[in-house]
Image 1: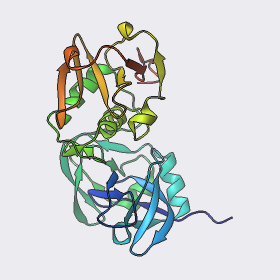
Image 2: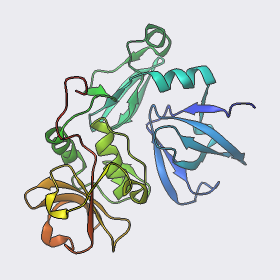
Image 3: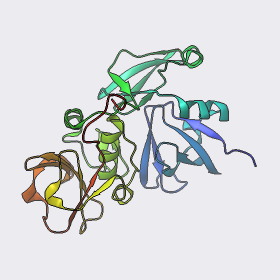
Image 4: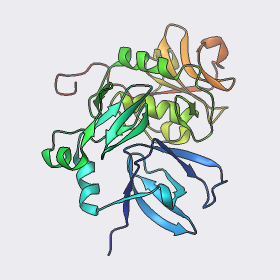
Length: 256
């Protein structure tokens, strides 16, 4: 059985569509450095499955960069860096490319990759696998404040609830699914809503596509009124809330 073709994003951001049409609804986005499998082709579009979260969507063929199966597997094993600047520029393969917060940078200790990729980046970054605690998450969250709602978006320049939660945890070293429905099943269930701790995810049973991050005290962060905001408990319906715990309470030296 032949392996499916592979690809990697080499543009700042690429729309993933629901159908094989350029005007179809946005289901997600590809950021620089994210890699994927090609599932199908139709006209000038290809259907892809993102490796990070298994999300699927259609992108334009001319925005696809093919890579070998060997390269794809090597990327899976590499602990790359993730950009933690709101935006920046990377000098990659002898050209400058604009990148956004959450982009995956081909910066690694693998000497073969360092030679092949020829990367220069002077901005802020951290290892994708490095897990960080709540205080780091809280500071990271500030970069999403006032970001406009965009169905299918996952950047501070346009984001939906699932994208906001996923990317926030990605920066902190945790892998979550793309959609709120899937995120409701992630981590550990917090049985008593009154025992939540900062960093817990809060979901509304009534509003299936809403998700919030508990910031402590009476504060939550999530999409309210078309943008990412910090809100108080009085903005949420106390009845019908459920919580999930993703962040580790305390990191061991091995996890840090």
